[in-house]
Image (tube, rainbow, N blue to C red):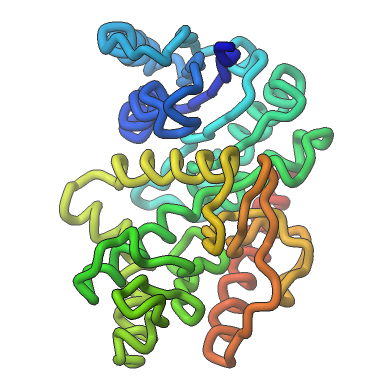
Length: 332
């Protein structure tokens, strides 16, 4: 029997990430090659014409899985009945702006969108926040959609996770699909901690630890970490625009694994609501290693944390605590 279409919302859909993301969803990269979709696209009034153009292109591409397109500047219409929401729209930091200014703009955007989602989305809707500051935007959304289960609101650190896999595969000259179980801890910012202590590579002699194969702790503890932390800035410097293709692709990966499950023995990184695991304060949206099964994520437990990692994990948690109090000060 044919599957019922899944309704997927993309906010900021006329922007660069949205433009890269919607064809991936329509091709089945997010929810599977047998899952029909109806794409809901939301953007602000000044982008209405561009949004119309994106809708025309989706129609022109004749995607077999695409069963409908909603393109609107009205949050209520955009959120009606959606099963998955990818929150790409946000207010970017502009030259001369303080963090508090950006936070204040995003608090008002996410407050309005949280309310529309809570009232009009499907009750089991899964939410992924991409717009920066992603962790704190997700927390604001949770605050203003109190009936949404906390486990259904996440933020994107899969981009950082994929960047870490890419750096290891380049360094070792192995296929990226043979590297697994890197972890991104903390904030999707330059304080995040990319951790390879539990990561392995598939070799002809079986799975080997990344640290053993790289055999250069100095590189792994310095340059590797800063390259992943600063990758977004490096891409802006090269492209004069922020990452769009890789962000869209990792948003698909995040939802794909959340809905369809992670492969056995493999974990991925997701920004999720902390329950106090690994000594991270509860009540933050923090990136942890997770496994997914039957549409539910679970934090991987029992990983050994060395002193170097502890310091890094606590530093990024401290930044998130500061961001949270800054965001809450904007609510008043």
